[in-house]
Length: 354
Ligand SMILES: Cc1cc2nc3c(=O)[nH]c(=O)nc-3n(C[C@H](O)[C@H](O)[C@H](O)COP(=O)(O)O)c2cc1C
Image (cartoon, rainbow, N blue to C red; front, side):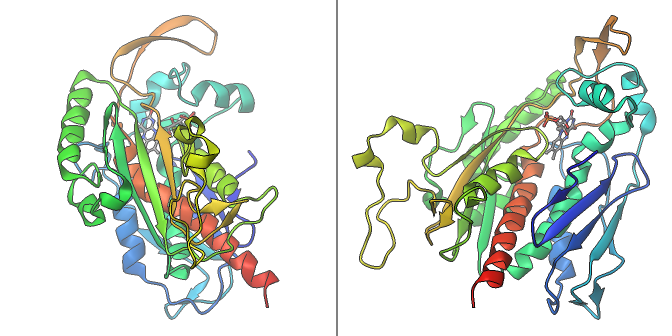
């Protein structure tokens, strides 16, 4: 399996499966001398971990991280940072029903066809437990980018959505509700919907929006490695993501150029920000904002038709502990992937600018 590494200078390689002994990662390229704030890594992990509220999977994992290298006396040494997160609450028998048959719209079928042998327990490497490692690396990246503020929040669940511009929202509300919605009234309706969907044995999708404030001008390399192209790849690499749009996005296609252009003010800022803080693949100093669409995930507790490994049509009903809606737990993952993209461009700039 190729493609387990993300980044050019600040490089994260992850390994591990959902029901193996541990997941882990190696961060190569982290500058030396960074004082690591371990509490903030733990608090990011707590935002992603399972079992944190009644509307997420009830798998109980502390998701505590142990660092094995690259940090000495609380500071990075510039050598590879190796870490492990032990799996402590596996119930492999919950997955015996997918050993020889495939959950529709999960990765079971394609893994079997591509690799011929798969760890079916909990989806193995296709499980979103892998994203715990991204959150560790993202938390360290955020510490390098301490002047930049990255805030993600849930902006829709099913057809319930926040109908305000992000500048009208109070971001301090996000962590006060289990949905991680930035608007308390909308959060209550979203929570109710997720609970109803869970009771039905079904799943529902949603959107995570992300706003990056205080970005310097100049992040992004303007041909193949455009800032928005790398953000798109980062977001689309998260499990269950179906869509990415930044700035005016698909709605912007309905406007005329005269309506869409962001006119300059004398200070170089723009009056509007349809560009979403990126022009020509380079950050322009305005807020970067984007939306990430997550599907209703595949494992449902209702009977559905599928096939087994011999292509017999069989009936399957989900078992085990699953997320009825993944967006509340996806919020820190979106922030982590955004931080990994930004830190890479930040470090690239340091190598080419005197
Ligand atoms: C935080 C998070 C939690 C997830 N939990 C589940 C889950 O409980 N059950 C499930 O079927 N899929 C879950 N997924 C999605 C699967 O990992 C994903 O759908 C699967 O790997 C197939 O990949 P794809 O949907 O990107 O094609 C979760 C995704 C995220 C981001």
